[in-house]
Image (cartoon, rainbow, N blue to C red):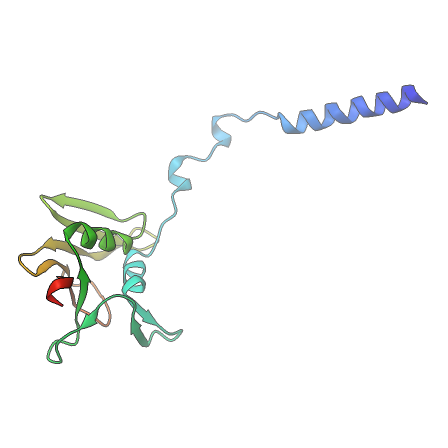
Length: 156
């Protein structure tokens, strides 16, 4: 009886080992391209700044406040310095956004999940109390705001 039990145990261990240590070749491994998740970059950006309901209607600004009645689509965000403004701006970008830098200006090209262009936004350092300005290129369909200025907290 002990012989059968030991034989059965050895057989089960071999079967488990065979399954655990099965090898795979290069073709079994997905390429890096298939591992990358794609995003609707414009929507990702939009959703970080503006909260909308299930129908797409405006609810509130998650970032920014319009300061002037004659510019209701110009939002302002208080920051301490350019590094903080840059850090906040980058959190609004989907992981797959292509960012090009020209000096300290950032231009971010947006695409949808299928790789189709959706426009671009730029982060441009400002002067004085205006730390930086975020603007969209023509044809970029951003809803509920058109410009965002990072303003020094001390100037608020």
